[in-house]
Amino acid sequence: MYSSSGRPPNLPVIAVHLCACNYLQDLGYIARGWAEDYWYYVSNTHALLGVFLCDPLHPLDFIERFLLEVTCLGFTLAMTAAHNNGFEKEDVPFYIRPLLDEFDHSKKELHLHNTPPSVSLLLMVTIPVILIRKVLYYILACPCTTAWRHRQRPSVKIATYSLNTLGKLTTLFVSIFGLTFFVLGFTASADLNKHFPLEFAYSQGSAWILSLVIPVLLNFNPCYHTQGFQICGVVVAGNWGDERGRILHAIEKTGEAENTGGKKDAYGSMDPHIKGYFSRNKKPRCGDDVFQTWNAPV
Image (cartoon, rainbow, N blue to C red; front, top):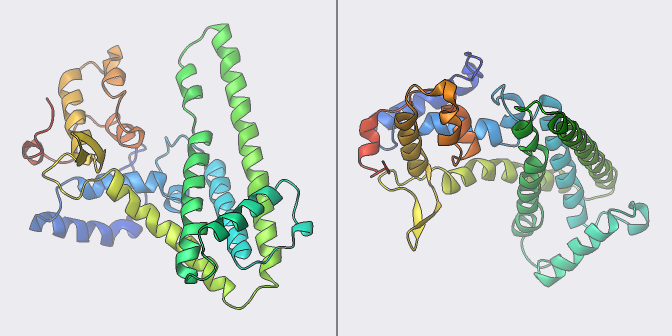
């Protein structure tokens, strides 16, 4: 549970979480190490937790993570207002109008006018917010700069400077859009009905909750005796067991080769967030006996 700086991220916040997870691990309901890995993953990727509890080596700094979250909040606010028909198109900036037109068109195509607000908000606001945040995260956390920084050739330095400048401009562009959405949603909310605050809270709260649930389905397999949900022999979701098995194999394979560059190559195909932890820790947090039932590749 310790970050790369050697100190716990926030013990008061996770004390109850650890007690509950340890109890479930003792009963055999979850594999040892699953809770710690899951917490580390969501504390680096979750929309809200990632702002305050992430590892110091997170690819985004605090300002970028904060701007990313403000942008998503602004988008949720504006789209919830649009869901309530709270915008007059002549009052909206020209670069936002195509998005609102597409929003109205999609709402009509999906026949959501007569559906319960909880369903239409989930489909038209919450899920798009999650997808947009994921796309923005990968844009801002583009690994190009970290790949180039390890070299010293002049041409590489120029490329690094260009990529860093592009990253800063991208952050500025994202923040401008986020501020625009935030102002639009805030101004429109004054003219909407009394249910708007509840609808906004529902949309944003659903996004935060789904951000906790989706990693369990996509990255952390609840069926610990398998290597994930497979289709035609290919793991399509819940590949935590498979990742941990490959990590154990990488640890065994590299041995004492930390200074030779072998560790970097061995971890090259890992999930970047899981890789981030294990590349700084020689030993996995759960024993080898846990992996024997997973038939992990060796």
